[in-house]
Image (cartoon, rainbow, N blue to C red; front, top):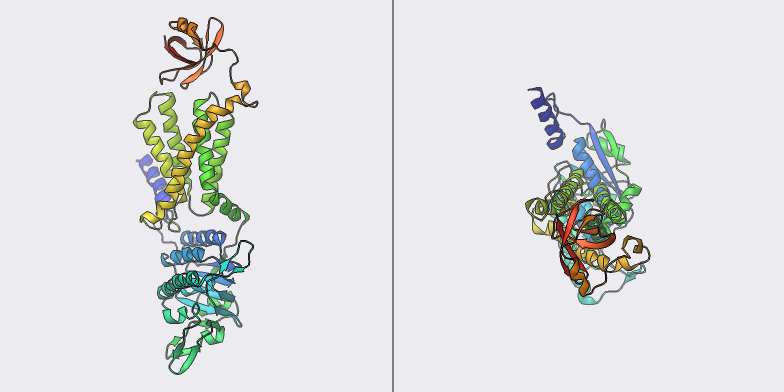
Length: 460
């Protein structure tokens, strides 16, 4: 009975981390503040994702996006907007200085926008950056295509936040005009950019144009939100998150080298260079995606379980059957899941649509096929290099007709055959291979066939 109770407690922590064993409901007094400063890029997405995840785990009363940004990558802003739409915690935007371009998109996706004195929001026209960092001119048809896409995005963000889509679109298209009664808010020929006082003007009895109010700082904002007694948790960018961005960008390469290294290690005795290289690359892969808020420790655990099952199939139950296939599927699943975006504070993917898994699946497929190619190339060329020449045997029998006399010879294995390795016959070392069985060191073997340089043996 006691064992059953312990198991239930462990399961509650694994699957219901916010569950209180004593049956008490946690009453959090936390407010999470996520600074959105500088250019909006992929690294910032990692910070926002981690902030949302922490807010869910802390059961925060509110999330505040403290914004001071000139804009940035539209795709990263779109992912942040998507995350905002899936959160159950109230999210507010506080424009601390400026929210331009992609920053304005994100602000529009939140139901309540507050601004500091002298702050500005707007000017969201799309621009193409050159490789050197400057603004690049776009052909008219390309510009219209991009503008149309950005307009759709900003309208959707405004609808998500409960703001006027037509007002939002004026931040993107200068040719539009926006009026409230006879009052012209946005003139034709000018992109809409508003100060805090302009955004806060009343357009009806109980409705402001865009901003819900002006606050001197975060503490004043908490008073407006009636959260003045809350504890503030500020999410800041860490060096490891910048490192995670680099890891995510080379994920297929790390997987390729990691899987290829493990395949090669299975083919060579002991734990050496290839195993260390493969393990290092895979640890970097999971570490980077864990920091980015994508991979959990369960993904690494699943991968290890998969590798163990493959090892059992290769070394304990020779052949490749259900155990090895299960291990391969589990390992590949863990890699896909580690790169799939998930809901903050949950193991669930952000959506079960194919688009959520398409890019991870492509990356894993490239890495898997590449690792097989790596195995073939390394097996063919590496033994000929100076570095690995000491691992190859110099004493081998030449490929001639006299080799047929070897059939029936009995010798002993010098190392494990997995399924290839080395055995000694009449004081001569020969490279041999089994029919697929795993044979340990010091096993008596018999030569059953010779084909060119390939010598096949079986256990006596």
